[in-house]
Image 1: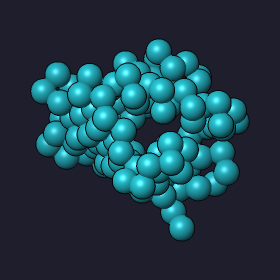
Image 2: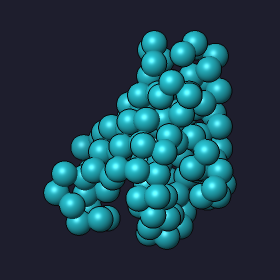
Image 3: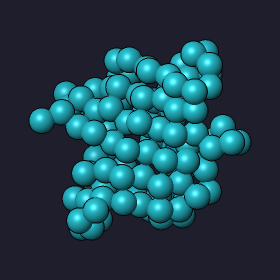
Image 4: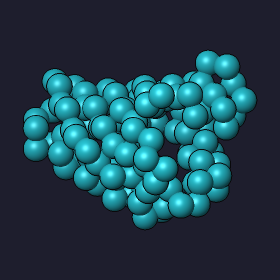
Length: 118
């Protein structure tokens, strides 16, 4: 992954979320994606906060969009690695979030680990 690719992904990802268009959001994720998040643990009532597979991720994101109709992300920073990116953003409530995203060989997000400000 190059710096430009990371910035492009981050900007398209944030725009998709801010549009609340679930189909557009899902274009960023690999079929075998795995997400781990404290919000997933809360919304799905699962202690490990894991969501595996694109259909399950889609259902989780749908639930999140319904639970937070004012959802909006403001990118603050983008950090890039060889096959990964970290998106650092603020949501509509002012909560800061950092999402580590590992990319698949096809350039889609294969693994996400979300971390939130205290």
